[in-house]
Image (cartoon, rainbow, N blue to C red; front, side, top):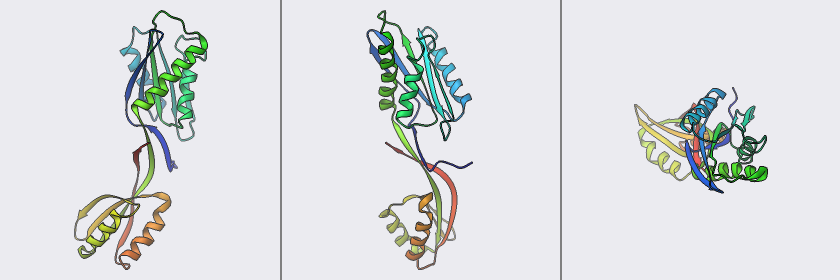
Length: 212
């Protein structure tokens, strides 16, 4: 499977509540990498809010957004799930499921009001929960003799690369996060830095998260 070099998703599970015309709209968020995970989360929130008027949901899953669903859960067609899904798309998020629970306050909002309410609940909720950038990185292992450690560590800390950890073995193993499209440049830079005395190996690929 080819991994995306970079994408955006929510920071963590979370919830946020807004009140519109006496109706409570509570948005619940979670990451989901499969449709099964999304459905499980939706059922969890429905059980938590079994007395709610509506538990509307939307999710966007997959590298190409190939799995996307919207459910109005009894609200007029197109006034809840789709506006929620559109907010996720507009924010360019992936692998996210959201449920907006509504406790009716006695005042009808009309179709336009519902669309704004459900979209707004998701948008405000995302601001509260937070979004992260996930960038595909390769963990590069630079193995050098101990007398190189000071120079290598000092140069790394002043560079664009992010130091992961240092293992003190027979030789020092300096592990660095390097973007997949910068690996060759890193190898060349480190080779020059150590006068060709370093053994540079490519390790596992991982996603590094930073707040947006």
